[in-house]
Length: 148
Image 1 (cartoon, rainbow, N blue to C red):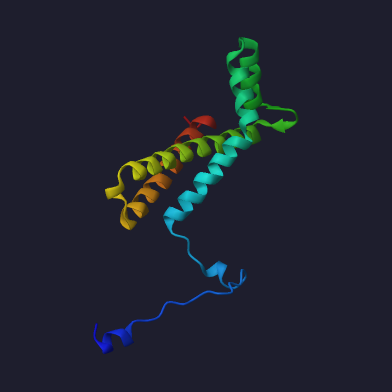
Image 2 (spheres, rainbow, N blue to C red):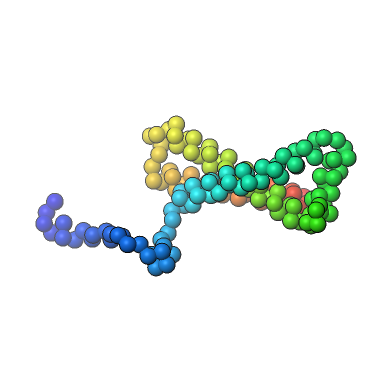
């Protein structure tokens, strides 16, 4: 490179002592980073709600009486908690499952197709992951809340 070209290149800032209150709020995480963090959060939500998942499965398939108890938990409520809150917990579980599944498939695709991994593919696949998981969650949430 010529001497004039090296003088015009702007030096990147170095962060040696990061101030969490001053520097971190201005940091913009890329979409792929957001999807990665949400992948971890969705896995944690599914792990945390495992007793609820087991209860839902057990009461829905044990007998007709337990299935009616299962339905009434979402319609009327259970344990002093209104049915709407049970539906919101189920909706969070639906989102966690869908997002974790789609983001996991995205990661598997990137692991098996090394030549397809690029910055552009990471961004576009992250946007598709968010759009599909949120879209399917809205569709299934509308069904859960009885909109269709």
